Length: 198
Image (tube, rainbow, N blue to C red; front, side, top):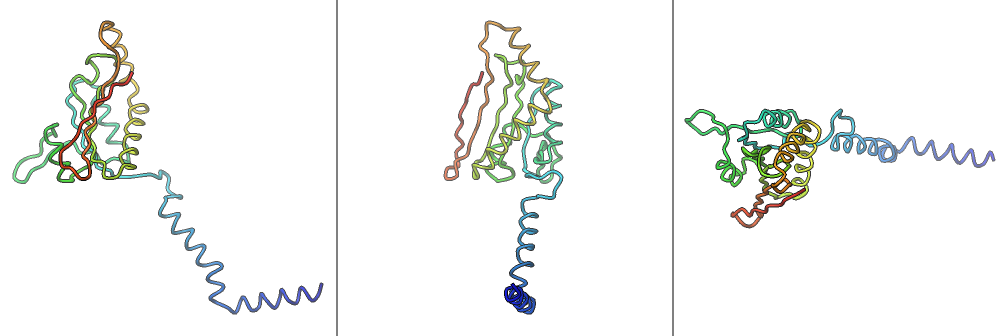
């Protein structure tokens, strides 16, 4: 037993003298833990994406649409753009016609249009138009998820209004229509797909 303890003491003495071994054993692993913790925001109160530029065009006069825009502006993941500024002219609200040229110019990659019939249109549901330039498909899916979360958590009363509107028109088909315009990475011409959900 004394022989084993003597060997252990000898190895520890040699280990303490070897600065390279000490660094590789303790300093570098803790440094890597700190580095990856900073990258992935382990110690942040609210980890996740921040500052994704999102253009919002509000064509709906319903107060709920304004509440939705305000909720999107409060979402830390988005940097909401609602105005268009051009050199030599005052700022003005964004319109749907502004979105595609600005997206082609890479001013932003995501946009949401709240049409005038967002709530009171045909059918029971919300009508939104989402435009995306999916250079990064993972980012596009994440933005769609964040938009859905904001809709369901910040302004759930919009769905109640849409359902009441749909019940007031029993002869009209139910469902919400979402139009998605996507820019393929190799083609400058946008393609649109329209889907209807119940």
